[in-house]
Amino acid sequence: MAASTETCRRPHLPVMDNNLRSHRLHQPTAWGAFFLGFRPWSPTQCQSMKNKAQVMKEELRTTILDSGSADLSLKLELVDTLQRLGLDYHYKKEIDDFLCGIHEAVDEAHDLHTTALRFYLLRKQGCNVSPDVFLKFRDAGGNITCNDTRSLLDMFNACHVRIHGEETLDRAIVYTKDHLQRFLEQSLSPSVLLDEVRHALETPLFRRPRRVEARHYISVYERTSTRNEAILELAKLDFSILQSLYCEELRDLTLWWKELQLQEHLSFARDRMVEMHFWMLGVLFEPQHSYGRIMLTKLFTFVSIFDDIYDSYSTLEESKLLTIAIERWDEQAAELLPGYMKFFYHKVLATVKVIEEDLKRQGNKHADYVKKLLIDATKCYYNEAKWREEGDAPATVEEHLQFSMPSSCCMHVPGLAFVAIGATSVAMDWAMTYPKIIRASCIVGRVINDVASHEREREQYSGQQQGMSTVEACMKENNYTSKEDAYYKLSELIEESWMDITEERLRPPAGQPAVPLLEAVVDATRMLDFLYKDHDAYTAPQALKRVADSIYMDPI
Image 1 (cartoon, rainbow, N blue to C red):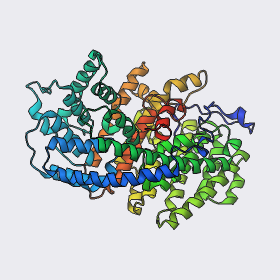
Image 2 (cartoon, rainbow, N blue to C red):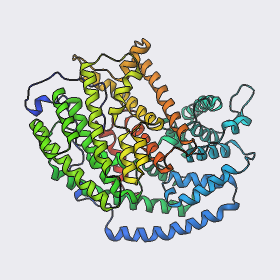
Image 3 (cartoon, helix red, strand yellow):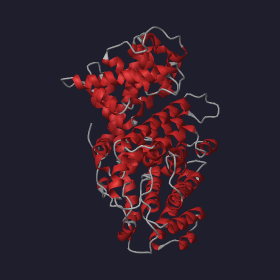
Image 4 (cartoon, one colour):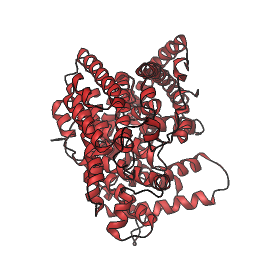
């Protein structure tokens, strides 16, 4: 959504043809009107799957409740399996009760696999369990004394829910990563464990988007010799039911997008409605949030267009006029705007009016925050545009982030998700103050985006005066001559930000919003990591197509 801060700000230009004014050549959408005619399952098939899944869910619930006397390791593995298959939302109370029980129980002697999995699941749940549980596995030099790859994989994932100052986990992450990399290099034949190790080294388990992980892990679990066939079948049914729902949402969204006709008036803007829906289902994937996903997709499709206008198309004066008009929020304010903005402005106002009416009919008391957050987004974009064009180059990364972090709009994603969930006004206001967990999420989004797009935009704007991204700010602050040094330094900042996120989730509940809201922040950060870690998959979405196909189209 947010473009890299590397982008060159063009000088003030007279009004001219749109195609001449645009600096970017965006890839066209890969989807078009595809979802108007696509159904992965017929209505009859969907209803049959729902009926069967309902029976199987209750049978599995009985199994979960009857597992009280089972070995701790088996119970932990069951919870982990349900979470990774994307079934845990059906059993929230049962899982919460189980994890609360083992957190309060006296820690007993267990092997590294069980200890690491227990630590990981409790930390992921927001329970403040001590890393001292791993001391018994260290030798005199402080290194983990284990050569079992499965156990070290569990330990590696556990290390990625660490917080600042946990020396035991800081050292363990180095050891486990080295062991897993050697295992990867030395393995001669494919195996489930090999695939798991490769995937973990690419993205630790805690940072994977839940729907993407569910699709991936179903294929992994299917090849596991100890799999439970009933759980596997339910996971496939549940995935297919949600797949059908997502395609219905995309059908409605495609109709909305075609009726807007924005591409005919704003040909320079990225057409990424399907990719935006994929982004938003990473934040709220459950079936009860169907309207929330549709709402978020519409709003952030607009935010994406705002980004393209402010970042690479409009003059600073035009940006100022658009910001003033959005803040006024009335039809007459359109008269302030240049012609190419007027049509878009009217569409934004009309769409938001319908969304506000929908929310009010649903009993949502905070529809006014939709408008408030969109106004804030345009102010953030304008402030950064003005800073880049009129201000001095930032001397430090921190100075850069003062402007570029808000304009990433990474606060606005969980903020509007809070509206969809039905958060309190206290929680909404809390989000807009950029508390530590949201600030950390924004830093991850801003920095990972800048690194991913750095080389592409350097080439794209070769020979033109360039703005500065956090990469340039980092090189300037540390007197680096190599961009690789800056990438490494910024990767440390990203790791520190993930530790901030974990730390905030472990704080006592007083003064913090409800757990589902904090989880929305974490899920939003996972999507940022997924979309921007290796490349800007939103601006250049061909790399995203295979994963999107697996979520929306491919039968499982």
